[in-house]
Amino acid sequence: MYRLAIITNSDVFKVFYIEMLAKCFEVKQFNIFAQLNNALEKEEEFDIILYIISEGINQDTYFHNYLEQKKRLPVLILGNNESDRFSIYINHYGVEGCSLLSNESESVQMRLLYILDNKLTGKKSNPKARYGLTSKEVLLLRLLSSKNSKADVCQMLKLSTRQVERIRKSAFEKIGEKTDFQAGVWFTRHFLPK
Image: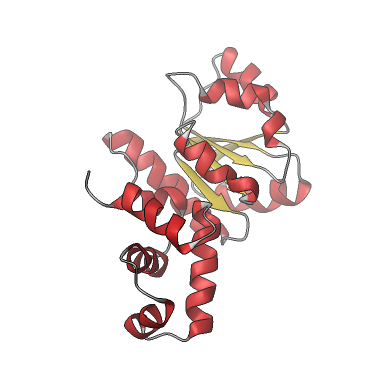
């Protein structure tokens, strides 16, 4: 069984996620990253870290210092994507995955197992899994990167304008972009061969 370190100071997440994840993981919970840092220094072993954040991660120097180490455990951040923090943590620090708090708990469990599988097989996770994008969101980003109009996208996906706008908003929130052009550039950088 995998050993999972959860960092959260919210009682709601402690109860909800620990119960759900205890089916697949041996779970140990920490209130702040400094506590996990102390456990790691005492050579306590874990396979992956789930960092559940609501706000204030920018001040967590223990976490930032840990992310800059060459040899570290894989990390999945669970939170909201305010100030494009997901893309900063993935692109600057190389965090293995980020997921929105609004995602279903089974989705979080699958992301953790996917990251661990990639670690064991030596694969790099693809952008779809890394950013938690759905297949429809990837298709929408692909169409936007090809400079299709919103009307064309609606027609190609056979969806209403409202549905496309909802998918677009969700995808933009996950990747941290605000315009169709930025999303197209993001898609080209992350999905097309170099």
